[in-house]
Structure formats: structure tokens, C-alpha cells
Image 1 (cartoon, rainbow, N blue to C red):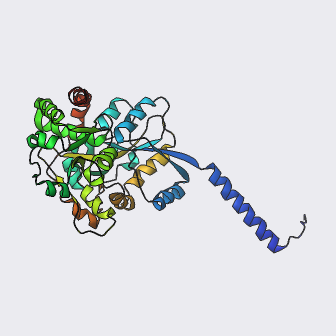
Image 2: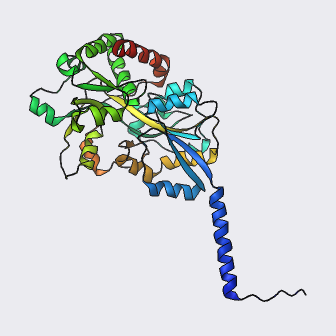
Image 3: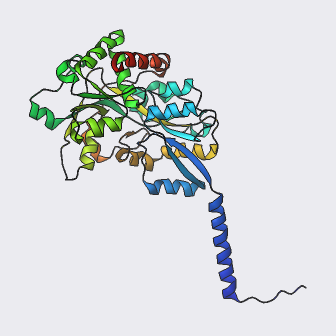
Length: 355
């Protein structure tokens, strides 16, 4: 029998501890990056993201690529050398553009068990059947108004799209450029669906009346909207924005200072999703991230971080959403129509409003 020299037990424990620490450090050093491309509004609690990293053995690298429209443009331009493995924030107004450019990979079959809330499937039936993009959250793009400004001015809120095109209102409105902003694209699509070919005369009246075009939702809401020091008391935003105003108010308030103005033909059902990118790496971790975005914890958290509503069946709205009001009767513009006409709409908008 071979004999080994004796070793003090305390020294052995210390050595084993150091060895375990070294192994942990080595494993951490080997953790692969999962590159997640997002729009600028992506925001989830750090502890949720950390838990995902620990469960999957990866390091999340969040790549914020501007507003959603700008993000899609960047993904198309970098298609040959993808800047991410998975993307969150492409919505149904931009989905057709992403598909046409071939930047989305098929969804893994392992995600097929995730069930949409019935109201989402009803409002946006074609996106509910997507095979290359997984819905994560939804909401309504609509006009928001500054209550105090309208109360002080004595001007009534507009009631129709035709009212909005009158000079008295057009000069009060800021919209987003549909080429760079998903809310801008969404609002444009809603008006086209409502007015058909006559929409360009309507947009021409808005331009003549003084409508302002911002490059992003952030610029429109935080720079141009009168609630934040701008000179425009009407802004294209979200149904949930009044709830966010209550949530973030410095002093506790019970009533939102803003109100939704849901004009017939001026409301767009927006659904945001997650997708794997063609040519991306870490496909298993990317699939896990997609499932993570539909988990009850994330579906609850995103309501007060990204101010969208949950799409996963069985996840309830948080209490502050009572200030958002009920979703209006509106249906998503089909992705097929967006694919066929979206580029033409953006070009016509540029010629009519930005020239």
C-alpha cells in the first residue's frame, strides 16, 4: 500500500476553499455574453436580470440602439455581422420591415406552450400567430393632452382627426418621425387605416397648421410636451402614460395631470416582442431569454418600468394602471399591409410633412 504524508485538517479545508473559489472565478470568467439588442426604453429591475444570468450561466450585454425604428435600421445595416443574439422591442408596426430584411430567425419550438391573453389575440390576431417573433407586451398608441394647459386656455379637446388638422390644434401637436420612431410609425399607420388615400391631404393640413415632428418619443414627450417644459400640449404617446405620470409624481397625487385623447382612427394597437437574430450566437440562452420575458415576474415588472401591459395569460394589471383607463376599441393594422405599404407611407410622410 502506498502511503501519503499526513495533512493538517484546517489546512486542508483552507486549500479546498481556495480551490472552490478558484473554480468559481474560472467559471465566471468563462460565462458567455448574451447580446440583447433593445430600444432605448428597455428597463427591467436589476435583480431580475441578475437572476436570469445566474440561472443560465451567461452575462447579459444590453445593447441599446436608439428608438425602435432606429434600432431596426441598425440591425438591418449590421445584418452581415449581427450586433446581437436576440432583440427585444420590435413592434408590429416594424415587424414587416424586419422580416423583409431577413434579420429574424425562426422561433424555437420550445416556446410554443406560452399562451397569450385573449384580449391580445383578439386585437392583434396576425401577430399572435407569428413564427419568428414572440409577443411580450402590448398597449395603445394614442394622443395625450396636458389637462392644465387646456383648462387655462379654454380650448376644448379635439374630438376627431379632422378637428386635429385645424390650425387651432395642429400647432399644438407634436408627433414622431415614422422613419425613426415606432409610435410615429404606429400613429401614421392608424391614420392611413382610417382615412385611406385622403390621409395625405389631412397630413398636409397638419403641416400647414404647424405640427411639429420629433425624432423620437423621448424627444417629443420630454422636450416638446408642455408637461415637461415644451410648447406642445398634445403629443403622440401611450394609453398608459397618464398612469406613469401618477407613478412618478414627486408629490403623491390621485389624479393624472394628463389625459388620453382617443380620437376615432387615431389609436393604434401596439404589440412589442422578442426575436432571435439571424446569425446570432448563444441560441439556447436567447431562447431562455425569450421565455424569461414572458415570465410572470417580468410581465408584472415591465408594467411600471416600460409602461406596457402584459400579454401572458393570467398576469394581472398592476393597481396604478387604473389611471390608464380602459383600452379603446381598436385593432392592429395587419403586418401584411404594413409590409406591402409601410415604406410607401413613410416616403409619402416625408414628402408631405418633412419637405
